[in-house]
Amino acid sequence: MRITARPALRGSVLSVLDQAVCSLSSFLTGVIVARALLPEAFGIYSLYFTGLFLLAGFQNALITGPARVLGVRPSGVDAGGYFRAQVRLQLMLSAVHRAILDPCRKLTQLLGHQTQAL
Image (cartoon, rainbow, N blue to C red):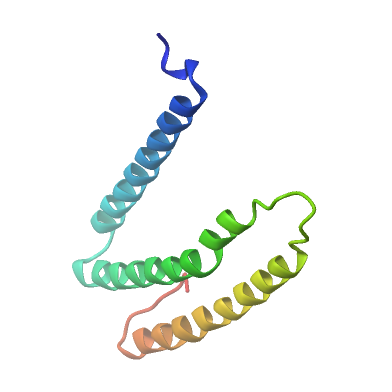
């Protein structure tokens, strides 16, 4: 029997493969960056990367996760107000992210490290 014969099983297999590809690419990116940078610069990169994952987790918990659950609405229900509130929340969260990242970038520059990407 083929794995893709059942839709639910096919979706599960595709989900696992997607996660494997994302994890492998993230790992390989870390290895490439670690080999390209000095240990001190890689430490700074790691701190920024960890901070971005933390901020992305907040975004997922506050916006993406609820939108996935509440975005599937029964017919006849108007979800426009909900999605307008989600857009406002996303804009506010983006401003908070920027307010956190700018001082971090400036602090890094003050400590003598150049951060071109930020």
